Image (tube, rainbow, N blue to C red):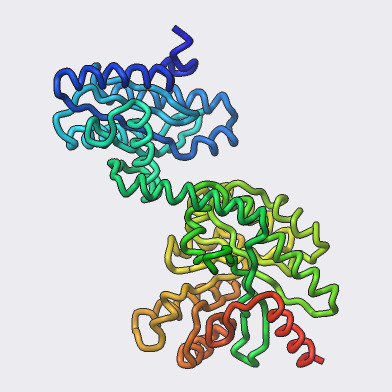
Length: 432
């Protein structure tokens, strides 16, 4: 009994699920019927096991299994096919809507918190659905198709379901190829950093840089970050890639210092997944490796990165601030902005998103939003930087409202390290 079944919830394991799918396929072909396969993935499972230990993870898996089993019909089969991955074989469905209703019932089963070690925890789920014979005609292909749909559900924000579509499979193949190319690109040294100036509107002085990742792919030229960063985030490659970006920015700072240039702080973007998987000490070790003062480095995070795991993010950010490393909230105003949220964040800087800056001074709504963000930053004792400043009238509006630090094409486009060094040299002469 143990061989084909999972030890913890006692459910069929992947091998048994595939065997049962073979049987379901034969029966469905014989009687001209349809059935569905649902693949389910949990959110926060790793966080719970990392925080509460593996025993809590075991208890969670047992509770999840129980909730799924009581949701489906007696004729349906529930199995565990991965660490926190479950599969459901819906024995017979006459139309796709039946599978959708079943998925909605399962998702609703996770609306209530799970009690672990005396504390309530909310665990979300995402579900991918594949139909036989519509989407695949073999056991492995059915699971693969449902898993592809699951990936789409998670990319759409999770806590939802998605049906398999051919374009999803095509996209998955492109992502797999791109992920392979990204890993090879890092090994071959194809990535480089460009540096966009942060400029004071008071005297046009250079006050800092933002390090921006660029990929010069041989035979293709520059690949847009908007094309490869989401894939790197999805696959987890963003973590080693983010480590490289921080390390390279620090290496460049040290090189400038050794050349006698007076450096300015350099900001590096930290993605949500990168923030979740690294501690403050991990970031500090990279900075210390290059013998840099912590105040020369600023880590930029998005509001969404904090909200994905608030407790971990607050812990890391507080430790970073205590170390003297500056922390900026990037794209501010596009996420969960509120004073109650802001006052908990141990950050030093707010960056006003370019989508708001674009509308000033001609759009009344954008004027109100930008001036309010500046006022909020002032009340909380935070620095404020406006992104995407391209026109003089935008700069005039920002300076009038006491936002004097900006970045954008008006004051400087991103440039390679050599040109950034020239800007530092000019700054040094001007200061002298």
